[in-house]
Length: 135
Image (cartoon, rainbow, N blue to C red; front, side, top):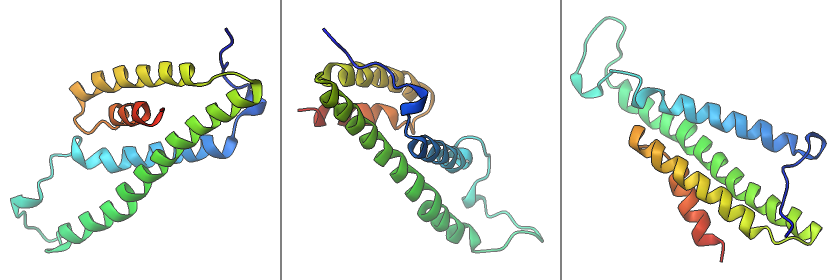
């Protein structure tokens, strides 16, 4: 039984790899404040360098331009990657579904472990959605 092999360096979608790196960097930036910071907006801190009322505005801008964009890009790339696997399989006359299922199972297990560490994990959810969309 034939299966899909990893793509060679000359077959890679460079734009997709760059975009994925950009999205992962953005997700990292988006998560900086949710576990690596002890800042609390509700503490009502005062000081000469704090601008009252800007926390809520900046939180909105962060959500709109950081979280809203990078998570969307990463989701798009997830679907695009699966579509490329199916396309490569069809071009070679191979059923790509077993390979995709194996990769989704790995993602599901990795995401489950990561959920124990980081409650905001998205990999587990992507794997679940991927399994639902296979049929």
